Amino acid sequence: MDCKVFGKGLRIRDGASCNGGGGGGGLAYSAVAISCMAVCLSSCSLSSSTSYLAPYNLSHHENLATRVCFSCDYVDHGRTNQSRRFALKASIVQPLNAVSLHADTVVHTPAAEHVEIPAKEGYIPFFDSDTEESALSIIVIGASGDLARKKIFPALFALFYEDRLPENFTIIGYARTIMTTEQLRNMISTTLTCRIDMRENCDEKMDQFLKRCFYHSGQYSSEEHFFELDRKLKEKEAGRQSNRLFYLAIPPNMFVDVVRCARRRASSEDGWTRVIVEKPFGRDLESSRELEIDHHLGEELVENLLVLRFSNLVFGPLWSRNYIRNVQFIFSEDSGTEGRGRYFDNYGIIRDIMQNHLLQILALFAMETPVSLDAEDIRNEKVKVLRSMKPVKLEDVVVGQYKGCCEGDTSYPGYTDDPSVSDGSLTPTFTAATLFVNNARWDGVPFLMIAGKALQSKRAEIRVQFKHVPGNLYNKKFGTDLGQATNELVIRVQPDEAIYLKINNKVPGLGMRLDRSDLNLLFKARYPRESPDAYERLVLDAIEGERRSFIRSDELDAAWEIFTPLLKEVEKKKIAPELYTYGSSGPVGVHYLAAKHNVRYEDYC
Image (tube, rainbow, N blue to C red; front, side, top):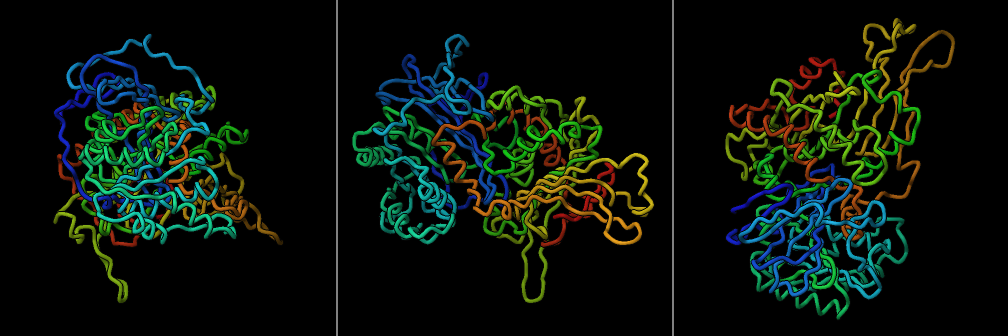
């Protein structure tokens, strides 16, 4: 593909290929963070030549997935005859960028040409089209795949179940698989559950939802098939103003083809069109810039972290190098890449988890107090943190790869035992890296990131270890292990969402015996109602134009600048990963790395 980047925009030339890729399945999803990108494109007329809509980035993971959500917002009247210029609008995790998608001429738009009228705080100022006379069409591209069946359709049903979808909505599954609408309904009905509150009208709501679901078969690179899809959408929209949301549950190599075809033949003519695509997008800084990408963080952790920091006075004075000894960001999965090795082998754990999700969480953790909760104010502070960080050094990194093992009659395959993974692959399935934020608040504080697959537990959490009490009168009671006396704040996303603080207390009774206890907020005990799935939050944010959970492209650039030199060095030097047993706590080297930076690391993974 011949692409040219100018400023913060992308241009895809008319000669870009439209080759199809794999099927709707094959996407790896893991169990932690949702990273999504939303691009909002508003149109304004240009001179001749054809413009194309470029895709955005999204990341997929199971419970806390990482998706990239292209919210491509535009109104396109007479889309086949006129070329358009698109202003890229993003949110709390996204900026306003100009995207030119022409065949020949790169157009630089002066800042004065772009005037944005503020809308409701936290929302992308799209067109005010969400009226009773409008219709929402949700098109799931790759509808026959596992991701759509197991995650996207259940998330859409949960939103319908909670009355979060508009009255006039239609869901159309699109894939290359030949099937009927009835077959699609039968397929997805096996994954739909009324998990929230277990209400009595579950079956009735499920039947109502399935009646809104339809199927259309077609190729991903065929404009003719997308034109047929457009005709079907218009039938369902019945003359109402149309808003269309495309969810691309397909491999990354097919994004451009689908979005181009949707842009030319199936975009809304009188409302908005937005696109969500699954991550990862790009392998390094250069490739990620080929298309503007913003990420969505869809789990409660993000919002809880902001509330914890900025609405509790007790944590304000403690949140700095004066009291914090180190911070650990841990993401572990208890499963390997079985059946998804081809996808993972092309990216590895650093690109899949660390560079996007964990680094974004670090930025939220370490940022200064924003001027307001407005999207741009929060993003500005996060970018400052990332720009204060130097690229990761190889000597501060441990990479590992899991090997097979047997436990009784059960055998667990190693990473390279996967037939879709090349023999002798050096792709890391585990990485631990120490990063530093070089500013006045965090100077000298090590931030230890740990991410891995096929570990002993499924876990996602932040662990904040505080410094020892100076001149502690009770040091003798703890013996030689002063780490036992260290206070620790843990923000856990999974397996059971919780926030707890480890403190020292006296054991009741005669004599002086100290113990370490937890002040614990266990969310499922305090709030029995089940939390929404990350995919539900993602889709709802995209529909409503909510910007607060999105990360803009300059933050992504800053994140890639931190990891790209490391990735290139590891691949150039062919660094062999340290092997660790499937179901273990990971490579031994992580303990040496932690000790090097005076980090108390336990086998949490």
